[in-house]
Image (tube, rainbow, N blue to C red; front, top):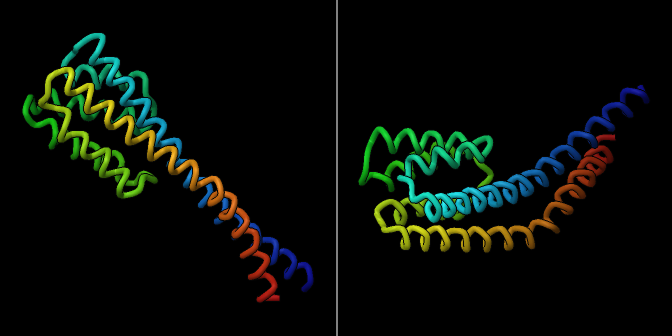
Length: 174
């Protein structure tokens, strides 16, 4: 009987610790995602500055340098731009971004920032496009720094609360 209680107690503590670690990892995933988005827009600025390729081709070139959801997003956006043609960039950007980043750890504000890029990019000349990218990079950098400052403590607290909650539940049940 004592062995069953001990095993159950360890499982409860492990489960609660896992929940705390999962919450901590969610903050880490958001940081990584904001960093990758900044990298993606840095690549876009480079494509526009150096090769002056059409947007569809630029996104396809960029997709070769990205991984995961970013690669898929850029490939789908490139394909949609080729099929739909000019003048619909804002709509296509929003559709593809919503579809690709729907289940991401980004907050609503961060996602809105990403979605708003389509409104300022597709129809402008090269200088204005670069300015739109620079503005978005600045906003993403600010969001990253703000999250980095706030999540350092939150990640530690999440892990600590997970362990503490597990111990508390064990004490209540035993």
